[in-house]
Image 1 (cartoon, rainbow, N blue to C red):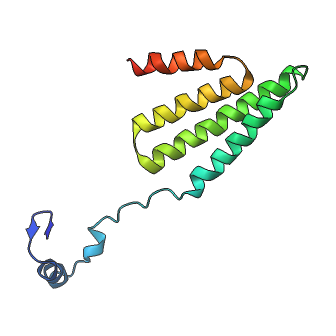
Image 2: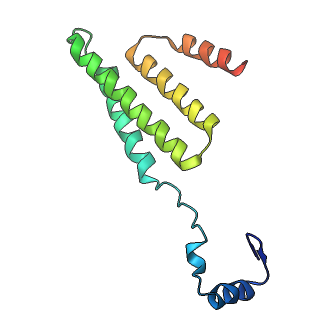
Image 3: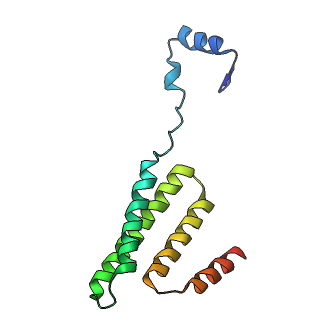
Length: 127
């Protein structure tokens, strides 16, 4: 076992620290635990709830309602992206999740067609 410049068996390192009156736990870092799964499930459920609300919102509804649902949808999407980054610590995965969420909101709102969404994904893949 090697702890900084100290090399030896586990018992030798522990004895060295104890002989000098040091606490070995104060020098070692405990790795952070991964984000709990519920912190991914909750924002996904919230996002789906807003997504269905956005998709089922009547066409004649006031503009403030649709704008409010857009803000809540993108807010919950941001929450999903943050949770994904904290859980997996992978920028590419977080970017893919973000693009998927944005395209899903735009599709649910009827602002883009499925064909346009597929073309957007193809153009991103080529870069």
